Amino acid sequence: MERLDVEKTCLEAAKNGIVAPANYNSPGQIVIAGEKAAVEKAMELAKAGGAKKVIPLAVSVPSHCALMKPAGERLAKELEKITIHDLRIPIMNNADAKFLRTAAELRPSLIKQLSSPLYWEDSIRNMAADGMIPS
Image (cartoon, rainbow, N blue to C red):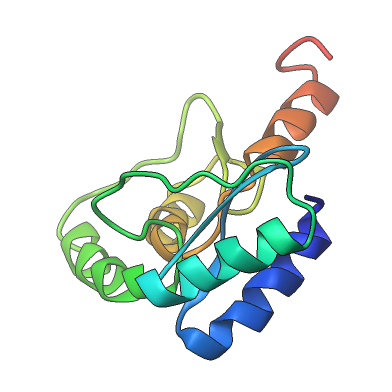
């Protein structure tokens, strides 16, 4: 399914609890996460909406969705205890699909990625556009 279709499917299924896109891996391959009943409803709606494949993943945590916000808050407290320096080599932040270069950017990025979807597809495109990988 296309991004917009998956997002609409999750919005409809969210009547049953928390569910949202978690990983935009590649065109047509999007992982969703959330509460079990809402994820199951989204899977049902995706099948009815023409998804080519709907596969439940055996994972232990609902990564990259709102259910991870408490973990992000705990991580923020732990990150306050350590010194983070500017980066010598930029890294790609998959939660925003952009390069990070400074300590000021890195800390909030680490926290955000726990409860925000990851844009792997966009990250790869941006790295190719910047000449970091062959396009």
